[in-house]
Image (cartoon, one colour):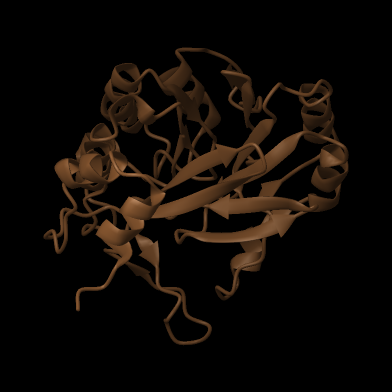
Length: 287
Protein backbone atom coordinates (compact mmCIF):
# COMPACT_ATOMS: atom_id res chain seq x y z
CA UNK A 1 0.00 0.00 0.00
CA UNK A 2 1.18 3.51 -0.84
CA UNK A 3 0.16 6.55 1.19
CA UNK A 4 -0.31 9.61 -1.01
CA UNK A 5 -0.06 12.95 0.81
CA UNK A 6 0.06 16.36 -0.82
CA UNK A 7 0.20 20.11 -0.32
CA UNK A 8 1.16 20.38 3.33
CA UNK A 9 2.17 24.07 2.85
CA UNK A 10 4.17 24.30 6.07
CA UNK A 11 5.57 27.64 7.22
CA UNK A 12 8.63 28.48 9.31
CA UNK A 13 7.96 28.47 13.03
CA UNK A 14 4.72 26.57 12.49
CA UNK A 15 2.91 29.78 11.54
CA UNK A 16 -0.71 29.47 10.46
CA UNK A 17 -1.28 29.63 6.71
CA UNK A 18 -3.19 32.79 5.88
CA UNK A 19 -3.33 33.45 9.60
CA UNK A 20 -6.00 30.75 9.95
CA UNK A 21 -5.02 27.27 8.81
CA UNK A 22 -2.90 25.27 11.26
CA UNK A 23 -1.02 23.20 8.68
CA UNK A 24 1.32 21.69 11.28
CA UNK A 25 -1.58 20.34 13.34
CA UNK A 26 -3.28 19.03 10.21
CA UNK A 27 -0.20 17.06 9.18
CA UNK A 28 0.19 15.77 12.73
CA UNK A 29 -3.42 14.54 12.65
CA UNK A 30 -2.78 12.73 9.35
CA UNK A 31 0.29 11.08 10.89
CA UNK A 32 -1.71 9.92 13.92
CA UNK A 33 -4.22 8.28 11.63
CA UNK A 34 -1.49 6.65 9.56
CA UNK A 35 0.24 5.31 12.67
CA UNK A 36 -2.75 3.02 13.17
CA UNK A 37 -1.84 1.18 9.98
CA UNK A 38 1.44 -0.10 11.38
CA UNK A 39 3.63 -1.92 8.86
CA UNK A 40 0.96 -2.11 6.14
CA UNK A 41 2.51 0.98 4.48
CA UNK A 42 5.15 0.32 1.80
CA UNK A 43 5.74 3.91 0.67
CA UNK A 44 4.72 7.45 1.59
CA UNK A 45 4.66 9.78 -1.41
CA UNK A 46 4.29 13.53 -0.83
CA UNK A 47 3.42 15.22 -4.12
CA UNK A 48 4.72 18.70 -3.56
CA UNK A 49 4.14 22.06 -1.92
CA UNK A 50 5.72 20.64 1.19
CA UNK A 51 6.52 24.23 2.18
CA UNK A 52 4.44 27.29 1.37
CA UNK A 53 7.36 29.71 0.98
CA UNK A 54 10.27 27.32 0.54
CA UNK A 55 11.63 28.13 4.01
CA UNK A 56 14.28 25.76 5.41
CA UNK A 57 12.47 25.40 8.74
CA UNK A 58 9.35 24.18 6.94
CA UNK A 59 11.29 21.21 5.54
CA UNK A 60 12.72 20.48 8.99
CA UNK A 61 9.13 20.27 10.28
CA UNK A 62 8.02 18.05 7.40
CA UNK A 63 10.82 15.58 8.05
CA UNK A 64 10.18 15.61 11.78
CA UNK A 65 6.55 14.70 11.13
CA UNK A 66 6.98 11.99 8.49
CA UNK A 67 10.40 10.36 8.95
CA UNK A 68 9.49 8.63 12.24
CA UNK A 69 6.34 7.28 10.60
CA UNK A 70 8.33 5.96 7.65
CA UNK A 71 10.89 4.40 9.98
CA UNK A 72 8.33 2.68 12.20
CA UNK A 73 6.39 1.28 9.23
CA UNK A 74 9.48 0.46 7.15
CA UNK A 75 8.11 2.60 4.32
CA UNK A 76 10.00 4.44 1.60
CA UNK A 77 9.54 8.21 1.97
CA UNK A 78 9.36 9.96 -1.41
CA UNK A 79 9.31 13.77 -1.68
CA UNK A 80 8.15 15.53 -4.86
CA UNK A 81 8.86 19.17 -5.74
CA UNK A 82 5.88 21.56 -5.90
CA UNK A 83 5.56 25.08 -7.23
CA UNK A 84 5.64 26.57 -3.69
CA UNK A 85 8.86 24.69 -2.92
CA UNK A 86 12.32 26.06 -3.63
CA UNK A 87 14.74 23.56 -5.15
CA UNK A 88 17.81 24.50 -3.13
CA UNK A 89 16.04 24.44 0.24
CA UNK A 90 14.01 21.38 -0.77
CA UNK A 91 17.12 19.41 -1.76
CA UNK A 92 19.06 20.47 1.34
CA UNK A 93 16.19 20.12 3.79
CA UNK A 94 14.73 16.82 2.62
CA UNK A 95 17.68 15.03 1.02
CA UNK A 96 20.66 16.58 2.85
CA UNK A 97 22.16 17.54 -0.49
CA UNK A 98 23.71 20.71 -1.81
CA UNK A 99 23.45 21.72 -5.41
CA UNK A 100 22.30 24.21 -7.99
CA UNK A 101 18.95 25.68 -6.99
CA UNK A 102 17.85 25.47 -10.63
CA UNK A 103 18.71 21.79 -11.12
CA UNK A 104 15.53 19.64 -11.21
CA UNK A 105 15.02 17.34 -8.24
CA UNK A 106 14.22 14.00 -9.89
CA UNK A 107 14.43 10.76 -7.91
CA UNK A 108 13.89 7.05 -8.57
CA UNK A 109 13.33 4.54 -5.78
CA UNK A 110 12.28 0.90 -5.89
CA UNK A 111 10.34 -0.99 -3.27
CA UNK A 112 9.79 -4.75 -3.65
CA UNK A 113 9.85 -4.50 -7.44
CA UNK A 114 7.66 -1.37 -7.64
CA UNK A 115 9.46 1.67 -9.05
CA UNK A 116 8.41 5.12 -7.82
CA UNK A 117 9.61 8.13 -9.79
CA UNK A 118 9.58 11.61 -8.27
CA UNK A 119 9.41 13.87 -11.34
CA UNK A 120 10.14 17.57 -10.90
CA UNK A 121 8.04 19.62 -13.33
CA UNK A 122 8.33 22.92 -11.45
CA UNK A 123 9.52 26.12 -13.12
CA UNK A 124 11.76 28.26 -10.85
CA UNK A 125 10.13 31.62 -10.18
CA UNK A 126 6.73 30.52 -11.53
CA UNK A 127 3.68 28.64 -10.30
CA UNK A 128 2.80 26.71 -13.46
CA UNK A 129 4.51 23.43 -14.30
CA UNK A 130 6.29 22.39 -17.48
CA UNK A 131 7.89 19.38 -19.13
CA UNK A 132 10.67 20.39 -21.52
CA UNK A 133 12.83 18.24 -23.79
CA UNK A 134 15.45 17.70 -21.08
CA UNK A 135 12.89 16.53 -18.51
CA UNK A 136 11.18 14.28 -21.05
CA UNK A 137 14.53 12.77 -22.00
CA UNK A 138 15.37 12.09 -18.35
CA UNK A 139 12.00 10.38 -17.85
CA UNK A 140 12.39 8.22 -20.96
CA UNK A 141 15.77 7.06 -19.72
CA UNK A 142 14.39 6.30 -16.25
CA UNK A 143 11.63 4.21 -17.83
CA UNK A 144 13.80 2.49 -20.42
CA UNK A 145 13.81 -0.83 -18.55
CA UNK A 146 10.54 -2.04 -17.01
CA UNK A 147 10.39 -2.65 -13.27
CA UNK A 148 9.19 -6.05 -12.02
CA UNK A 149 5.92 -4.61 -10.72
CA UNK A 150 5.67 -1.49 -12.85
CA UNK A 151 6.06 2.19 -12.05
CA UNK A 152 4.25 4.92 -10.16
CA UNK A 153 4.99 8.36 -11.60
CA UNK A 154 4.62 11.15 -9.02
CA UNK A 155 4.57 14.81 -10.01
CA UNK A 156 2.98 17.92 -8.54
CA UNK A 157 1.06 19.35 -11.51
CA UNK A 158 -1.32 16.55 -12.46
CA UNK A 159 -1.95 16.37 -16.23
CA UNK A 160 -5.74 16.41 -16.04
CA UNK A 161 -8.38 19.11 -16.45
CA UNK A 162 -9.97 20.99 -13.55
CA UNK A 163 -13.25 22.93 -13.37
CA UNK A 164 -11.67 25.58 -11.15
CA UNK A 165 -11.68 29.04 -12.70
CA UNK A 166 -8.37 30.21 -14.23
CA UNK A 167 -6.46 27.22 -12.84
CA UNK A 168 -5.59 26.40 -16.44
CA UNK A 169 -3.05 29.23 -16.20
CA UNK A 170 -1.17 27.18 -13.59
CA UNK A 171 -1.50 23.81 -15.31
CA UNK A 172 1.24 21.60 -16.68
CA UNK A 173 2.73 22.78 -19.95
CA UNK A 174 4.51 20.45 -22.36
CA UNK A 175 1.98 17.67 -21.89
CA UNK A 176 2.67 16.42 -25.41
CA UNK A 177 6.30 15.77 -24.44
CA UNK A 178 5.16 13.96 -21.29
CA UNK A 179 2.77 11.78 -23.28
CA UNK A 180 5.52 10.88 -25.75
CA UNK A 181 7.87 9.93 -22.91
CA UNK A 182 5.24 7.57 -21.50
CA UNK A 183 4.53 5.68 -24.72
CA UNK A 184 5.24 1.98 -24.21
CA UNK A 185 6.31 2.48 -20.59
CA UNK A 186 5.33 0.43 -17.54
CA UNK A 187 3.73 3.39 -15.70
CA UNK A 188 0.65 2.02 -13.96
CA UNK A 189 -0.57 5.16 -12.23
CA UNK A 190 0.26 8.87 -12.14
CA UNK A 191 0.06 10.59 -8.74
CA UNK A 192 -0.39 14.35 -8.50
CA UNK A 193 -1.29 17.22 -6.21
CA UNK A 194 -1.59 20.98 -6.76
CA UNK A 195 -5.38 21.16 -7.02
CA UNK A 196 -6.18 20.94 -3.29
CA UNK A 197 -9.04 18.50 -3.74
CA UNK A 198 -9.03 14.78 -4.52
CA UNK A 199 -9.87 13.86 -8.10
CA UNK A 200 -9.13 11.28 -10.79
CA UNK A 201 -8.74 11.15 -14.55
CA UNK A 202 -6.61 9.66 -17.29
CA UNK A 203 -3.61 10.87 -19.26
CA UNK A 204 -2.12 9.11 -22.27
CA UNK A 205 -4.24 6.11 -21.35
CA UNK A 206 -2.83 5.98 -17.80
CA UNK A 207 -4.98 6.54 -14.68
CA UNK A 208 -4.24 9.74 -12.77
CA UNK A 209 -5.00 10.15 -9.05
CA UNK A 210 -4.77 13.55 -7.35
CA UNK A 211 -4.61 13.65 -3.55
CA UNK A 212 -6.42 16.27 -1.55
CA UNK A 213 -4.36 18.70 0.49
CA UNK A 214 -3.65 18.56 4.21
CA UNK A 215 -3.29 22.38 4.29
CA UNK A 216 -6.71 23.49 3.00
CA UNK A 217 -9.26 22.44 0.42
CA UNK A 218 -10.59 24.19 -2.68
CA UNK A 219 -14.38 24.49 -2.56
CA UNK A 220 -15.75 23.23 -5.87
CA UNK A 221 -19.24 24.37 -4.84
CA UNK A 222 -18.09 28.01 -4.84
CA UNK A 223 -19.82 30.44 -7.22
CA UNK A 224 -18.62 30.24 -10.84
CA UNK A 225 -15.38 32.05 -11.57
CA UNK A 226 -14.38 32.23 -7.90
CA UNK A 227 -11.50 30.42 -6.23
CA UNK A 228 -12.25 29.72 -2.57
CA UNK A 229 -10.02 27.70 -0.27
CA UNK A 230 -11.60 26.51 2.96
CA UNK A 231 -10.11 25.58 6.32
CA UNK A 232 -11.53 22.07 6.24
CA UNK A 233 -12.14 19.06 4.03
CA UNK A 234 -8.54 17.92 4.39
CA UNK A 235 -7.60 14.45 3.20
CA UNK A 236 -4.93 12.10 1.97
CA UNK A 237 -5.20 9.01 -0.24
CA UNK A 238 -4.32 5.34 -0.07
CA UNK A 239 -3.15 3.52 -3.19
CA UNK A 240 -3.57 -0.25 -3.44
CA UNK A 241 -1.92 -2.00 -6.36
CA UNK A 242 -3.14 -5.36 -7.68
CA UNK A 243 -1.98 -7.61 -10.48
CA UNK A 244 -4.77 -6.35 -12.72
CA UNK A 245 -5.12 -2.72 -11.62
CA UNK A 246 -5.06 -0.18 -8.82
CA UNK A 247 -7.49 1.59 -6.52
CA UNK A 248 -7.22 4.92 -4.74
CA UNK A 249 -9.20 5.74 -1.60
CA UNK A 250 -9.70 9.13 0.07
CA UNK A 251 -9.17 9.35 3.83
CA UNK A 252 -10.52 12.43 5.67
CA UNK A 253 -8.02 14.08 8.02
CA UNK A 254 -10.20 14.27 11.10
CA UNK A 255 -10.67 13.17 14.70
CA UNK A 256 -14.46 13.15 14.23
CA UNK A 257 -16.62 11.09 16.58
CA UNK A 258 -17.01 7.39 15.73
CA UNK A 259 -20.49 6.50 14.45
CA UNK A 260 -19.98 2.77 13.89
CA UNK A 261 -17.27 0.29 14.71
CA UNK A 262 -16.96 -3.38 13.83
CA UNK A 263 -14.51 -4.76 16.34
CA UNK A 264 -11.54 -7.00 15.65
CA UNK A 265 -13.37 -9.71 17.60
CA UNK A 266 -16.29 -9.57 15.17
CA UNK A 267 -13.96 -9.68 12.17
CA UNK A 268 -12.14 -12.64 13.67
CA UNK A 269 -15.49 -14.38 14.09
CA UNK A 270 -16.26 -13.84 10.40
CA UNK A 271 -12.86 -15.15 9.37
CA UNK A 272 -13.53 -18.43 11.15
CA UNK A 273 -16.64 -19.03 9.05
CA UNK A 274 -16.90 -20.31 5.48
CA UNK A 275 -18.39 -18.08 2.77
CA UNK A 276 -21.94 -19.23 3.38
CA UNK A 277 -21.51 -18.68 7.10
CA UNK A 278 -20.12 -15.17 6.59
CA UNK A 279 -23.07 -14.27 4.38
CA UNK A 280 -25.53 -15.58 6.96
CA UNK A 281 -23.78 -13.80 9.85
CA UNK A 282 -23.12 -10.44 8.23
CA UNK A 283 -25.26 -10.06 5.12
CA UNK A 284 -28.62 -11.35 6.31
CA UNK A 285 -30.98 -8.54 7.39
CA UNK A 286 -32.66 -8.94 10.76
CA UNK A 287 -36.30 -10.04 10.49
